Amino acid sequence: VNLSLNQATVHNLPLAGAIDVCRRHDIGGLGVWRESVSAVGLDEAAALTRRSGLRVTSLCRGGFFTHAARDERETAIADNLVALEEAAALEAEVLILVSGGLVPGTRDLGTARAMIADGIAAIVPRAMELGVRLGIEALHPVFCADRCAIARLADALALAEQFPVEAVGVVVDSYHVWWDLDVLADIARADGRITSFQVSDWVSPLPADNLMGRVHVGDGVIDFGPLVQAVGGAGYHGDIEVEIFNEQIWAAAPDQTAATVKERFARYLT
Amino acid sequence: VNLSLNQATVHNLPLAGAIDVCRRHDIGGLGVWRESVSAVGLDEAAALTRRSGLRVTSLCRGGFFTHAARDERETAIADNLVALEEAAALEAEVLILVSGGLVPGTRDLGTARAMIADGIAAIVPRAMELGVRLGIEALHPVFCADRCAIARLADALALAEQFPVEAVGVVVDSYHVWWDLDVLADIARADGRITSFQVSDWVSPLPADNLMGRVHVGDGVIDFGPLVQAVGGAGYHGDIEVEIFNEQIWAAAPDQTAATVKERFARYLT
Image 1 (cartoon, each protein chain N blue to C red):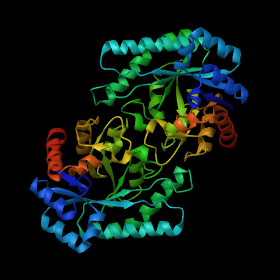
Image 2 (image 1 turned 30 degrees about the vertical axis):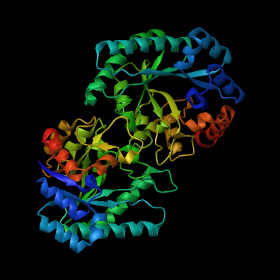
Image 3 (image 1 turned 45 degrees about the vertical axis):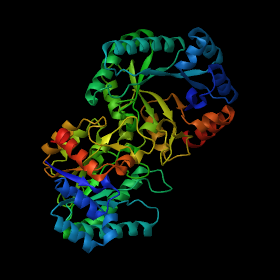
Image 4 (image 1 turned 30 degrees about the horizontal axis):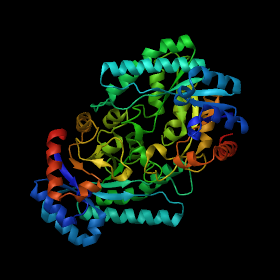
């Protein structure tokens, strides 16, 4: 198993800085955020990643398909098509999709979920042309209303299975799925469909800012061993990508963060 | 369908005050908290509720079975046995169980869940002698680590089904289960096992204090119609109990809170 650093973990660094950190710490993969790509332009970003020799293990992110107005939905799909071009130029292994929450003004999860399926269907043909895989990420149910109506790995998998396996898979993120009694069985069922394995740890009790409460692997309550074993058993042999949203970690020296990421990877994930 | 006011919604009132509010607003049921019972003593509490003519729709709460040390587990079971006596004396329809989160010092949900099953098994015989039903409540996965390792209605149901139906059922709480794609199907499967139906609404984005972010029915994103229909379809014809943890609502005049509860009940739940 190889280690990838998701750029969100060293949030304050531009793309070139994140690349340098990976190289200094002998981390072979990088998960890239679109904001850092547009900051330098796609051509420059692609040149940077190509020269770095790093595996671009993901591009974060597409999705957010749920909108009340048709033109908003079309704008979202157009933006996802741009993201696909970016992913192809960066030779990213997957475009990660955070699908979007409830449609504003509605209370019906079914409507949101149907809209998400329609959005994915609209971009799958181009994804297949470009050879870019889409990864549907289930987000923790705490984010169901406002960010992602796909709340369990089982739901992500049911959605992915509506599409060709080479085009659409699922993202396993420890932070989002650890609580689910069925997650190991769902991972096994996802054999061949897992596009990414992201990790961070859940701290209890949850900090006030739900989005920012993730911690280094080993500092929380998640039992990583069974997850790592299950994901490997389901035929995923790509990188484990460490993605941590946490203001304190962002304020730390990136080299310190990278060193901790490596140490925890060796201790808990291999 | 009848309305019950869970005492937590008017948190600052003692038992007698909560009873008075129900009577002033023609609310026929009351969900009682153990703290308010011990504040006046069980005999006095039982006399108050009996004289009031209110249905005691629940006693909140037992559970919290997950502890590292054997003597702590035994203390928890002993406390649950006391809660059963209280529920019997109050003629409460159910003792609600919040099962407990991860065992301190461990990361294994399986251990927690087995300990919960053992705890319930230890109190079922006495529950049956007393004719008190236990209601296993699934809590939203955001509380999985620290409060309740039973995170989905399906998990609560699988646990309840290990015991006689007259002794152990499940609590459906809108706040905890609304996000679950399978919840309507799980409610249908729970036919005959539903002991309680509690409601409050989910506001998005979630406030900083996760425990206190619940709002009046209709002020959030939950689609109550399908839940009400499904619970009725699964043979539950008891009260709908409004239980809202929210500092602002607690600071409001209890009569105003009760009036809002009644109005929302009529508009969204009947």
